[in-house]
Length: 105
Image 1 (cartoon, one colour):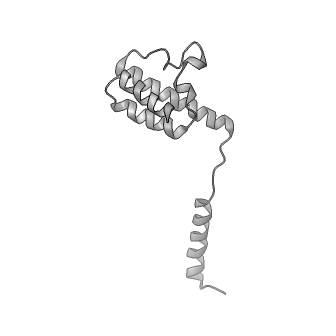
Image 2 (cartoon, one colour):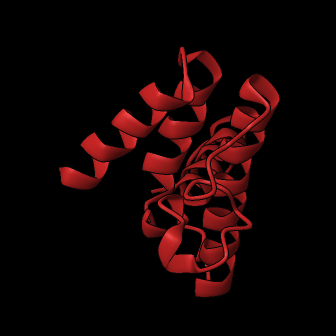
Image 3 (tube, helix red, strand yellow):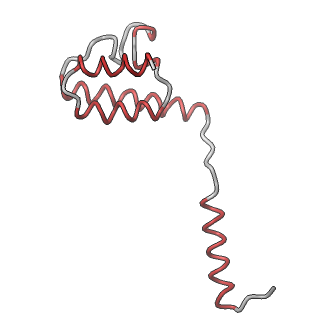
């Protein structure tokens, strides 16, 4: 089937856009780890800005990774949700209860 010139150009453009939209970017393990680390640090930064003092078990500088409750969370979507909630949450204690709910889920 041969398309008229006017339609052929728009068809090729639409085909190119569709093909680009269907590409899935590959994220390496290193990139994912970096994204997770950045998300954790963002949560801590907001909590430090809002409440000044952040308990050691939430702090990025916890003496042991086992002590850091955020370190247990590997899901970027969960960390992004925590980041948003840390902006509006009323207290550190409420944030810790939220972490309990997430980790017990």
